[in-house]
Structure formats: structure tokens, C-alpha cells
Image 1 (cartoon, helix red, strand yellow):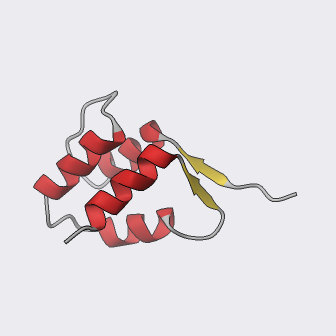
Image 2 (cartoon, helix red, strand yellow; image 1 turned 90 degrees about the vertical axis):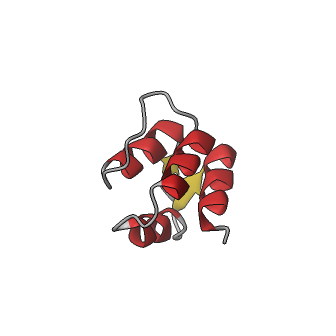
Amino acid sequence: MMIADLVDGEDFRQRLVALGIDIPPGASPQACACAVRAAQPVDGLPEVVAGLCCDGVTLLPEVRRAVEFILEP
């Protein structure tokens, strides 16, 4: 049996807040992504994104879209 790490919107927000980004409680994943883009550059962001995109991590669809938005040029 494989156990995956499921990342929902609140978990995503908490990971970004841990990087020092000011994101209010209850913010949507899209709002989190907008806050990240506004705060660039963010120390540690590449490592957080890499951790979210690795094997064994399952992102809810709205979190996946938010990560893709962060990665857009």
C-alpha cells in the first residue's frame, strides 16, 4: 500500500507562510500564488516547489494550478 502526502489549500498556505510570505488564513490557493508572485524573490521557494512536485505528493487540482501559476514566467 502506497501512502501519499496530500496537499490541500491550507497545507499549501502554511508552507508559504513558513517562508515568510504574508498570507491570511483561509486564502485560496490562487490567492496564495498571487501573494508569492508579488513577494518575489522568496528565499526557499524553489525547494518548496520541488518538494510539492516530487513523487509521493498528491496536490489537489486547485493547488496544482496555483503551483503552475507560480512557475509561469
